[in-house]
Image: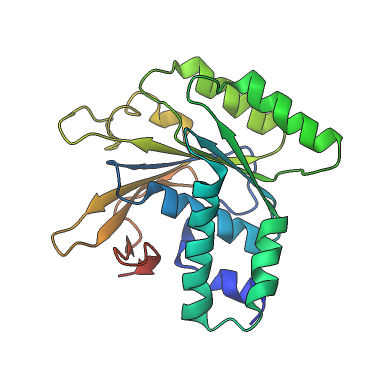
Length: 231
């Protein structure tokens, strides 16, 4: 099985922002429901399609972030019975860069400086940016606009994660919960993770590539493996 075939079997293929650049994606859920697992699967989908992914982890270590990739790759290899496991693991490592920031140290100028260092030294040139742990509560809209501007300047897709809270009843007209309810217009694709009574986690697709989605896409997270599955 080749990488393209493996990518085409990914249920997230229907959510891909495709070849479109300068788009922003958002994954929202309460704490512990699988935001990072979903972001990693989005990143792996991009890598299998020949992209370079820069995974920015705010407030976490490189080892912990790498472990998410290792665990999900292990499940993919077992489920798909992929023959060249070591080759796949090596390819992912080559096409992924993990960058960490302390929560208080993250900003567009610092991110841009570090990315430019990688690009100018011909170390790594990303096509897709994943930002896990961005503080939407204590950050002004302008900061997000700065990062969107950075993604446009560098011709990147960018994905963010955000934590929602059970007791916060603020929502945008399209159903995006706080703290992103007043900035949801900035995102082209928005995914909410919602726990179901049977312990599965539903992927509610509010917007996909700029289009408002009425019925979602029929996807869920398996609570055992944290892999995306079709309903």
